[in-house]
Length: 191
Ligand code: SF4
Ligand code: SF4
Image (cartoon, rainbow, N blue to C red; front, side, top):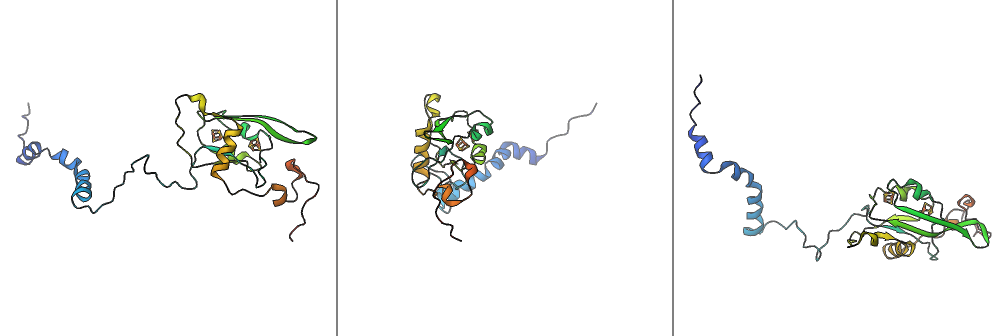
């Protein structure tokens, strides 16, 4: 039968000085002294909501519907975003533009943002860049039904986040009849 080895003096000292706890607190105490005593370190915390972080332009926040610079809606009601969405967030109800049977628009457009995983696939799928992700994130609500946004709410999101708007696509690219928005009187080509 083997006898238990007697504890060394160093083990006794570690036990009575709470050595492991002191090692664990080393980083905390270092920052405490630098920040509070020496005042040589800036705070890394933000006093939210009074202070807010600068978000990168690539931040994936609430999604918006966009307009062209003449304030017409970009969306042509093609449903591609609805098909691309893995979470079934989007519902598009499209219709013909009255008097222009070859041209469609989104009569109704809904996004249930409570389901959105902010993957960005809908933005990628849109052929006319009618969708964009904003840097808005303060959208906490008491009732999740309030996060089912309609077309007007999504357009309002786009209006306040993207005040600089693109020219209509037929003015940017002349050969766009396949986009369903052919124009009779195209402006002259620059070159
Ligand atoms: S970001 Fe992703 S989950 Fe959200 S609506 Fe777009 S495709 Fe759907
Ligand atoms: S993919 Fe773009 S154009 Fe098509 S319905 Fe969606 S937002 Fe509208």
